[in-house]
Each structure stands twice: as C-alpha cells, then as structure tokens.
Amino acid sequence: MKDDRRGLDEPRNVRLVVRALYLVCGLLLLTDLLYAKSPHFTFENWFGFYPVFGFVVSFSLVLVAKQLRHLLRRDEDYYERREQAADDG
Image 1 (cartoon, rainbow, N blue to C red):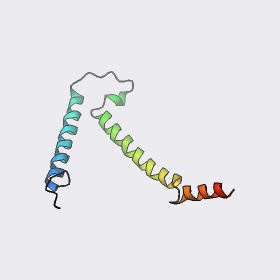
Image 2 (cartoon, rainbow, N blue to C red):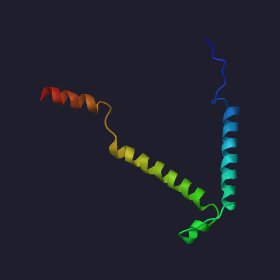
Image 3 (cartoon, rainbow, N blue to C red):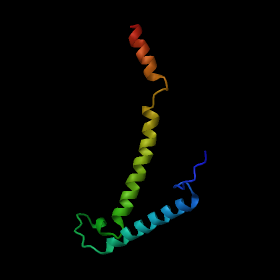
C-alpha cells in the first residue's frame, strides 16, 4: 500500500519551513529596535542581546543535558535485574 500524502519529510517542505523560521527569527530580531527598554544592566541595552542570550543559554542547556545523560544512564536491563533481586531477597 503506497502512501501518497506529502509531509514535512519532503525536501521542498523542509526548506520552506527552515526559510519561514529564518524569516520569523529575523523579524523578531528587528522588533528589538521598536520598543523602549528599561535595562537593569548596560549590556541589556545592546541590540539583539536577548535573542543571542536565549540562543546561548538554550545551546548550553542541550550540551549540559548530553553530559548528564552519560552520568545518569542505566543499563538496558537495570529495572529487570533490580526486580529479580527483590524477588530473590
């Protein structure tokens, strides 16, 4: 049975979504010029500070989560072995 539906996996649609995302991000960056700021620190007044800060923090969060995965990961049969040990004891 063939599925004729077109989804986001089609390269043309992926390019369209990525371009739309770039456009929206660019427009949101330009809105930084349109409102009056009342910064607590001087660097908050820099053009594009909040978008750059948000990107850096999000990217850092992903990197930290990848490292935490190595620290917190369990073996595939961890819970089965634990259940077996509880049944035996």
